[in-house]
View (tube, rainbow, N blue to C red):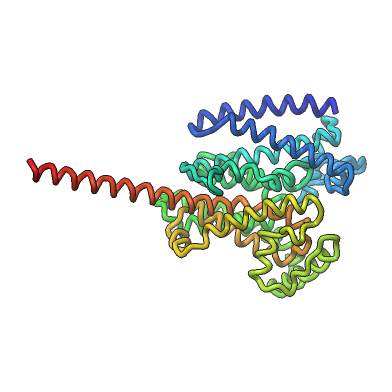
Length: 405
């Protein structure tokens, strides 16, 4: 535990240095808010660590597997689970990190994901939006507990969340943010290759249809890089579901999803989603568990959060939302495509509420971004309309004064 204490101090110093750098780049950056978020995230590290004492946790398997004496560092290099072993190996075997220190390190990776999420939201949406009477929406999103719980441990959740948020932040200015763009892309691809495909497709579609006037050179740069990468790694992506040599991709995916769904539904908190229509599958992935099917105390806490997701979702069920999407920016369309593609794919293979709670933490921030942008746009349009009305009244008063003189 002494090692973890010193590591906290080191990571805190590194974090403050990062804050100083980001404050110079972004005038809106709030060190106070990010420090509060740091402490909040550490609380969930403590909660997750206590959870591992009484429950089975993949984090223990990651730690023990990486200590294999007959394997070298690059023997672990690969995609999915083995990449987490690859990331962990030097810290465990070269620097002597114990289990607690590895949990802290990966929790820090997850925390950095929230920092980049904050940058992604705040840079693209400067308008403050309040919901549920007086709650700041951005603060509410950043402090959702389920998001922190699943990104505060040794495993896939923390680094892939960091990769996704780094990518989302960098894609606004890809040429000037090559480092976070490359690091984010690598993390996404090596941890979950199929999610990288969703992100790449979403970005390309966003750049093709976004309302901004983007230079041809910038568009070409994004298209060549992302489409080229997809072509290069297509076998790895298809290999995730065993379709790398399949001639019938649709049928092969249906077989895989049916087998995967059946195996997951047989576990403790399984739900049989095979017979669900697509809207109900999506509802289950986005908003369950709710109070009536919550698996344990963790499920009850998550149910409160899922209820908030549902209430936020109701805010976009308006006629003008379709018009908003048609006229939206690159990042809005990218976020929407990434969210829907990921949700659509996962609904066919997820039939366990515990796994659903964990998996959806990867992509829910893209949905929150779209909702937040929509509400901010409505508020902005209302402000502009009020200013115009005020100006019209001022002009009419000036005319009346001229007439009466």
